[in-house]
Length: 393
Image (cartoon, rainbow, N blue to C red; front, top):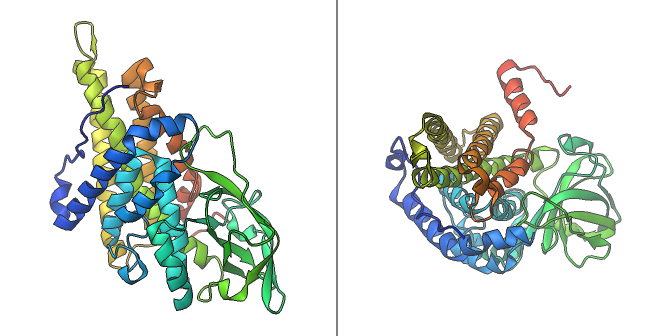
């Protein structure tokens, strides 16, 4: 196994000067824990397509779950830049591990906090924050991905409970989650959120196997066959697509930061390799074409850092729109995937080996560029925002 360099964040424009001491402390604390507990094992788990769920209690202790949720519910009480920094550090190690944390924070804890009642917050959030319970998010269906409004999963009011039927697909954390925040249509066709708990009769979570991407993340289906859901498990404070889409905004924001972490790891790996690999009597980093690759990498990373930071500032102020977040997610994942591909070329044949993280990052990012809104859908969200003309209708 190649010895990985001690990681130092690329910071070409001294962006650290714009961060608080608390932000830098959060970053270093997360980095130290991940370097000790996750980096040494992540290649092994990705190779065998297994999620390292034994890490969950430690992640809870580190505050990786619900960093922006108020402390009274077990969260970290951090601002959105702090949350983004944590996601960046986690994805620097692996996108699948960041997915597990993103789902828990933005797609499970966020809707319970935002749209649940006080009883639901107190029941679920502390256990989710500690990692005692893990959650998943049921929106995408086998026939409805980019068009979630077409969902067919539905529930009926049976008097003392709801009866839920349908299925969801491509659900991170599903195989081991204790709860699922599920979006389904009521008898009037309105989309509502339900908290479904493992053990409810008729609820199953078959795992999806055979993935070439996000191999250290557990992905599954959610199947509801006449599941009786208690009425107190309905999220009372939202209806319509606004609910799940606001959760996706939170997740997409985290991805915009996380993708920078993957890009940084690929860049640093390629930079070190270019200085050590000798061809034609000199380091390959001395050749113009390799310098071009590396110079473009650091340029795109720097632009992505500024984009994520500004959206984070706006999100802290309550001014970040869905379209702004879409732009950040789309751009930052694209540059990360391009950087992974260029870094792989710099490493030549070694770039495909598990001795280095690049091929794993590249494969992971092929999922990241599609989930939480595909690359094309985010482009059309920006197009709608600037023209006022809806390409979806």
